[in-house]
Image (cartoon, rainbow, N blue to C red; front, side, top):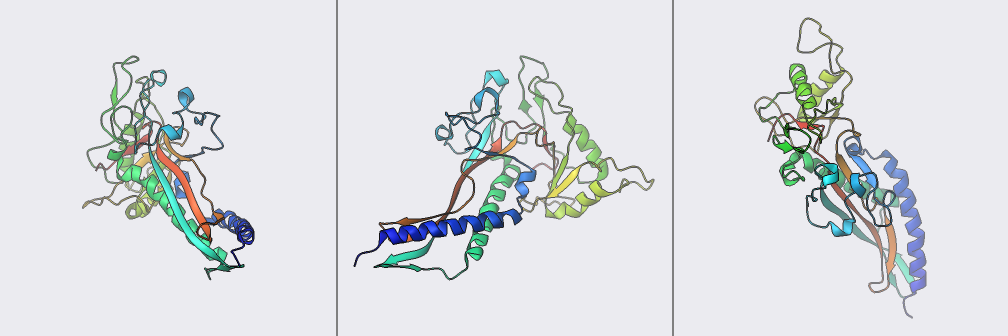
Length: 316
């Protein structure tokens, strides 16, 4: 007798529900560190009929289907006085055969419980997202924006239409070790970045981002009551700044220190993740191969709408 495709399809529908429920339940416990750094946008929920992202100046940057070039810097938009959008397209793809249809029978090919399988997929999926996000910090030279500069640069520009002050920096070429006193200098440099009109942003840093090697120092600087570098019990100026240790940041260790970054509030800086399709699972039956597949496939983009209010204090 031939393969019962109807039975196999029903099998796939049943397990699609089981895997989806398990995924939704388990992902609540997944540590999504990138959400503390990036503004995350669900494209499907935040796009109009033309698939343009809502909330971006001048209608966003158009359909993703028209922006498929790898790390493409989008063209200048005169209305926004210099559009610096830059993004990198990423795809996560895992496909597993969970059953095969033979004759009138559909036989499972995996012995692991659904919870174990989804847990492994979750770990792999969110590791991929974190690595892609950290690549902006590890390899900023690969993300060139509309002003022709990398994410971190000493030669960012703004429109001369509004000000003679057109060049600004969010990269310190002189390495600064992570100390309380150097944080004072870093805060000063941070506030000297320029907005689109050539005026100082005057934004305050709100997040100290460090690799594993600097986790202890970052904790002391942001959590101490007093200035840890001064014996006179001076007040710690940075108690209102949060710190985050992100293991995905490369540790550019020198004899003195490692790479570290200051970021403004997410509402002030331009680091984004756009999820074209949210992470999840799908179980389906293929009549050609007679296999029931479990897919964990989603598309997302990492990049920035402008390079302001983020700063690298160690150089590359």
